[in-house]
Length: 278
Ligand SMILES: Nc1nc(=O)c2c([nH]1)NC[C@@H]1CN(c3ccc(C(=O)N[C@@H](CCC(=O)O)C(=O)O)cc3)CN21
Ligand SMILES: CC(C)C(=O)C(=O)O
Ligand SMILES: [Mg+2]
Image (cartoon, rainbow, N blue to C red; front, side):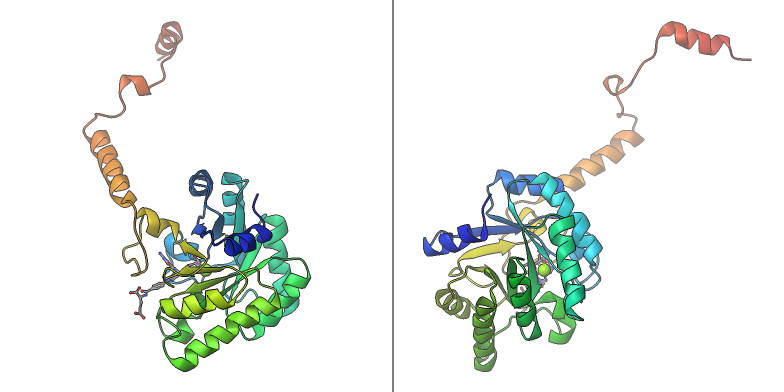
């Protein structure tokens, strides 16, 4: 199993880090089979699995349930789990209770927190307590209502400078990696070069230390709208639709089930049943 040290070493060796989300056992199994370096149980599960239109309604219980499923499907892959909306801000005790649930109860290998500001101090305390933490800057979906939509971040000089400072502060606080979402590629390149911890980009260009994408986006499953930064490698939705359409058709037209799909019973037992009929 890889560790936080492996990822720092990969950065030093300039080996790209692959990360992808998973939310259940079968998807996690595919990622482990592909030797993905890290699995993210993202709170994006609220959107791609639970049908919400943002990550805001996702709970710690949701994250625990899906992390357990992912760990069962990928026992030997490093799993990072998102702390969801308002589960790490109100007070430190509550943050620690939530982090403890993800680590002990669900079996996450690390947790991810969005943002900077007061979150930096929280990350420092969690790291000191032995919890490996991934930071997340740029487009932080839990703040969608504050940002006023899913928009590219750090385009203006002031925003870019603030983002760069936050990235350095996260590294200083002890985060072992940083997810950088939806920022101009040259800003992501600069931050990746300046930090010694790995920077995993999503919509952050080619010069970060690694890449992360949402499982459903990669396989073309479900999402009606895919962001510009996504590369879709298959169209699983079409495959599924064809299969379920065919099933419905076969039942209606009596083409399913066939003899080979049924269970039979002993003739004498059957005769006994009919014989006993009034
Ligand atoms: N399916 C899915 N994929 C994701 O990558 C993802 C989620 N869901 N849910 C949680 C967050 C939300 N994310 C998003 C959602 C939308 C855009 C988006 O529409 N971006 C615009 C850019 C707008 C601009 O130019 O400022 C785009 O066209 O890509 C970006 C990130 C990333 N995450
Ligand atoms: C988009 C990635 C980085 C994420 O946080 C998620 O999937 O929830
Ligand atoms: Mg997330």
